[in-house]
Amino acid sequence: MPGATFLEGESVALATIEEADLAFVHEWVNHPSVRRSIGQWYPTTRAQERRWWEADAEDGDSIRLLVTVDGERAGAVELEDVDRTAGRAELAVWLHPDYRGNGRAREAVELLVGYAFDELRLHRIVADAYADNDRSRRILDAVGFVHEGTGREDDFLGGEYVDTVYYGLLVDEWRERGDARGAEPG
Image (cartoon, rainbow, N blue to C red; front, side):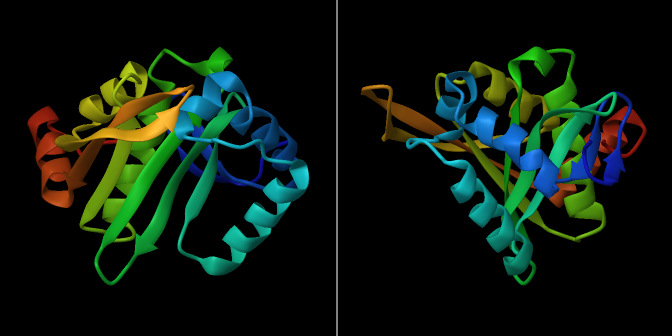
């Protein structure tokens, strides 16, 4: 059973990641369909996943939430390296293959971005995606992130060098996007 619901949307909810969720996270960050897209180069053991979870709970610079659909674990969305002084954080998201499509990742990202800008009062959120990860790039574009540059042959994955595409979203851009629809985004 996922942790407490922290943010709720129409088709997804974002819940706290609890000890009982670590087996799900461990399994899927190691799965080939997820690990390549998130840059998981080495296998992670369950003990390493537990240490990550414990350290993360103590450091306070990251917000990691479980994406749930109808109460079932579906993936994770996170703000890493939250810098309250500079008003900046880095966004990441992944979903189990069974839950991809139907706008669920986009909705999870919108919920967390809205929280970051409206409640944490951040000014800028950055994200990146490998150039061949069309799904992630479409999500970032749809949410309003702006392409800020490309790191050519920036990483080595699956036996080849790949480009990394860098994105940014400013709070004013987020709010303008909401105004254009007649409502706050998310």
